[in-house]
Amino acid sequence: MAVGGLLVVAVFVVVAIFAPWLAPYGAGATDFNSLLAHPSSKHLLGTDELGRDVLSRVFWGARASMQVGFLSTMLAMVIAVPVGMVAGYYRGWVDTVIARLTDVLLAFPFLILAVGLAAILGPSLLNATLALGVGAVPGFVRIARGEMLALREEDYVPAAIVNGANDATIIFRHILPNMTSTLLVQATVTIPGAIVGEAVLSFLGLGVQPPTPSWGVMLQDAQSYLAQAPRLAIFPGLAIVFAALAFNVLGDGLRDVLDPRTTR
Amino acid sequence: MTPPLLEVEDLSVRFDTDDGFVHAVDRLSFTLDTGEVLGIVGESGCGKSVTSMALVRLLPETAVVGGRVLFDGVDLLGLSSRRLRQVRGRQISYVFQEPMTSLNPVFTVGYQIGEVLRRHLGLSRAAARDRALELLRLVRIPAPERRLDDYPHQLSGGMRQRVMIAMALACDPKVLVADEPTTALDVTIQAGILDLMRDIRERLGTAIILITHNLGVVADVADRVLVMYAGRKAEESGVDDLFAHPQHPYTIGLLGAIPRPYEGEGARRRLQEIPGRVPSLRVLPTACAFADRCSRADELSRTQVPELREVRPRHFVACFHPGET
Image 1: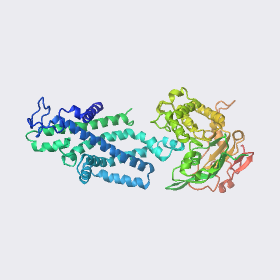
Image 2 (image 1 turned 120 degrees about the vertical axis):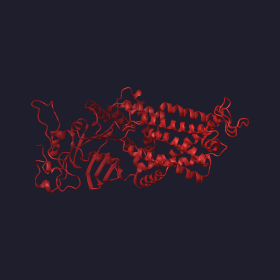
Image 3 (image 1 turned 90 degrees about the vertical axis):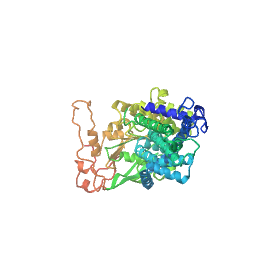
Image 4 (image 1 turned 90 degrees about the horizontal axis):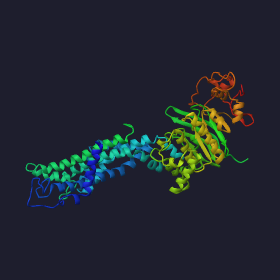
């Protein structure tokens, strides 16, 4: 299962990176001789109302999804992990404030938070990434803090202290590597959330702006032609489902492999 | 006479808990000379580990530490944390009881030893690796070239303790504090580690503070012994004099509790236990802390705290009724 998830994820990543070479047509290339065409050997998944090849646009759309998925998760980690670790290591009132703030933010639904932020920042791919990244921060803070609370009690921490290590060395050199597996699992859960989030924001017009392709934009465009050509919505929809599912399956698999408490 | 390397003066440690203070160590003084092995003995909760941790300020913030710890004339208790970090691992090293968990599981042992060297001596990666190899050889780990790139989980407990000792010795410290270094190990492995300790003292001239509850370990390695009871010093003397002429009834009790199955005729005697329990450390004592468990206790013992007296040359006892029997 996990290997399958990894394979599908790899396919999506490869498609996203190599879209210009893999896609049979350009992202905006129109073919006015075949508008809303059915799938054929020329257009494997048919064309949309402007004669644009659907398969090509799904390929190009993977770029926006993967970019937002990975970048926003990385952004969240860069902000949240140091904050959570420092809070967990030093405890005290700073920790109390951070922990309660995280709880409050976690009480907001992730997408509502992201939609609100994206609305404030204005529509663009970059802002969608920022909004989804910030939206994922509380989850990572909680994970990093929880791990820190457990790991700071390990015997190698005082062992590092007596060897003259300073706090920064202990936190980032000694403890951080011990929580990478947990963070990796959390990342594989956050990425599909961000992919779906990008689709939602783009669908609502808060993310990628047409004519740039994105799965969310394609769904939005397909709305008007739902009765005549439902495949315009089905194909990008399937892409979203498969991408999200693959990451989740991969995450579950990683959790089983990396978490010493479950097996081994 | 040269001043001692380490001089502990009136060290007191109390823990501020929800139920009030716990007086873990009460006005403890001792000295350690260059190249000397000092054994600190006592049962669980007598304050021996707390003492050792107080030396390098490892105690949590709930601990209130008083007194002075002079190392080369500098009071470690008053040092800035920056200066303190330069002492830890460089001048004074520490070996913990738990070799199984004291190494970081995600780094190779060579890297972990090298890290200390790079931090304190500023060695390059390659130089640190060479020196780490040398250290593994010093602590007599077989096939050190291969062990260098092993992760801690690939090593046995005894090997890991040797790695911990190698790490502690990395910067050629003047003092090595070993807190129950053999307690978590098999008896055969224990002997090897103690042997190594002796060897280190002889070859490197490192002074060692050996914390243990095992008088046998002390007899093996130490030059001088400090017996602790309820956070105070009960008896202190050279190791030979302590075993030949124990003065404090508590020390005599401890010696009676050592199993000696092969000692001469009719040696199949019952082990002597010390009756009663360690007193609470919540209130400062107004009597001898051992009085309730002692057959020699009298009115004096129950109303006054005995002070330390020199009853034999360099043999100190805190008891109103010292004597060998």
